[in-house]
Length: 244
Image 1 (cartoon, helix red, strand yellow):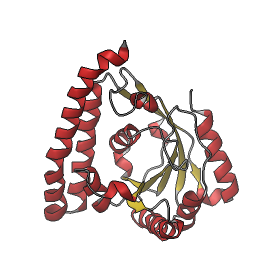
Image 2 (cartoon, one colour):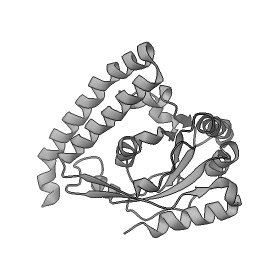
Image 3 (cartoon, one colour):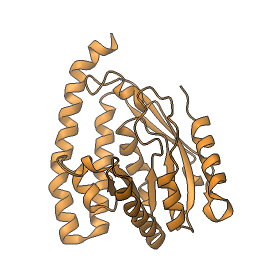
């Protein structure tokens, strides 16, 4: 029954979502080219605020737990499981104080209004998942960037989205490089729940009435642990916070 009801609601949602992307694309261009980074960042923040409001049409809500645990005025590496695009919408808005930058696949860097522009100009990095050699220096650059500017990187070590909420094995390569080139950073594990339910039927229709939960775990200073300890503790915290 929910799937049947979702068809007309999903049409309204997609129209609103697409309209936001189209409206904010030229806004981003003006902000970036005339006023610089801070103005562009504000435009991206509010784009994602309105995209989140679009998902409210579907009955979606966002809940972030323990935001006050995240260190301020230091580089931060957010490490999370990945369930859908809507993970990113929530993180950009609710973690805006930390200027989150994403490690994204290169295919997202073109063809999507607003999204592609932000990925190319907002400080995030694009990698070719079929070419590990290309990815390494790009992620290195992101580590150096957050170290220099006290900003944050978001990495999804599963490498791809989980379609049923069950976490995939974490890959260590990207995180290891970020830790090496942002040695003063803190790792902040995040467990994301219920985002996959929004696309349980695929991209259309959308799932209705989902409570997206982001559980922020205790931060860990990179300098206080060996990388193997960091990797083990991070994956354990993220996985234990996932509710299937």
